[in-house]
Length: 324
Image 1 (cartoon, one colour):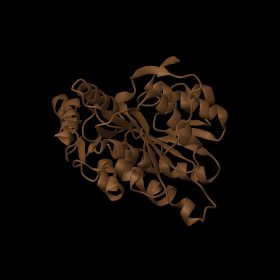
Image 2 (cartoon, one colour; image 1 turned 45 degrees about the vertical axis):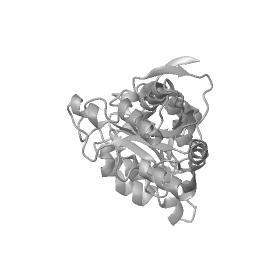
Image 3 (spheres, one colour; image 1 turned 120 degrees about the vertical axis):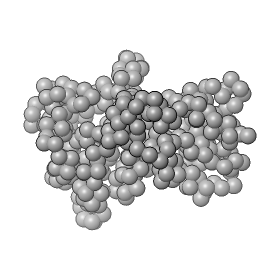
Image 4 (cartoon, one colour; image 1 turned 90 degrees about the horizontal axis):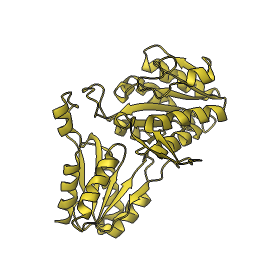
């Protein structure tokens, strides 16, 4: 075991992927010289040179369109959209080109590209730099979407995403970049579509991902002192997501809460609960609940942002309600 920060685990995954495959290239706004707005790509230019690590103009449409063409021509581009809020400008290339190429060409082409993009609050970045829009891209057939919560998963999911033959949106919560923790030697790839049971429990299932994992675990720990056993599942992969793991847990706990930082309406939590009702309705002993942000833009003021992002207290309250 070594100690590593979340951002450095992503950097290590990029370095090792580029060392393993000369077709892996990195480009985006300020990813080369400056090392990215959060320092994640620092050192890549010195190690791999300007042919493989390139700064681009400020045009998300151009960045993503170039990545689609590069991927269909034999490269494996890893591009950065500086904030997920700006993915709106890249949607044509992602939704109409990258996601559909394999289908439209009868499997003759694949698009092995990764879009790295930070989401979420916690750093006072305001309504145009703090959104969680992962449900947008998860709605599109042909796109895979992952969101790591831990340092080993930040590494393992990115290695798997770069190795995947189809386009993957790799979502990073910016509040996690400075998180420090243990990183195992010979860390494995993390299979896309497989959830992780982080904490076993018998009374209620709590499904989450990204920065909400830490708060979910804290809520579970608090309830344990009252004799309430919470099973915490880190989804890790949003599209595809691990229906089997969630259903198996539900069949044991018979209660379900889903927590995410994105707004509640039409979100990942809604899809998970709807699917569990479809295939596991008879397992529920209480109505399933969502803990998520209210239906409004992320506020700028720290006091308001603290209220906007789901808190440990709100998660704890929801868990208690399912047991009332």
